[in-house]
Image (cartoon, rainbow, N blue to C red; front, side, top):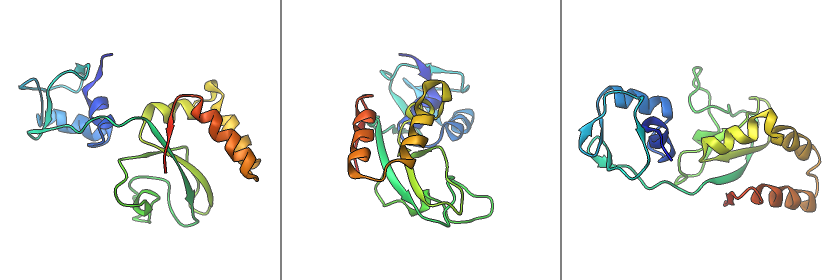
Length: 163
């Protein structure tokens, strides 16, 4: 399946899609030995793709984490006010992850994190029905049994769950 080079780079965990577009425009990316000059370049993953002369990491399987967000953390990768973020607070060694939705600075609760932009969009898009199911499910996840049932539903989508 063909996809934009910037998206492929982001899925490999090197950087965000937007940052990959900047790197491509700076001609820091090669595909099969040729410098790529435009972010509008498609790859299928079989190519030899190098960023600054280094091979991209292998793509990870899609994963989902449950994270308890405490009060006082912003749900963003970079905060213009330099406040502490959820992503600053994650354990070392995690791949680049994104949140599924957001929680306010003064909110505490369960936040889903994933290494897949596609999964995040599927869970957030109202027409897919998951957004409402997640919100209503979280208000009712007061027992271990209800949480287990919800996790089984997510697993049935074919996504691997890990801590």
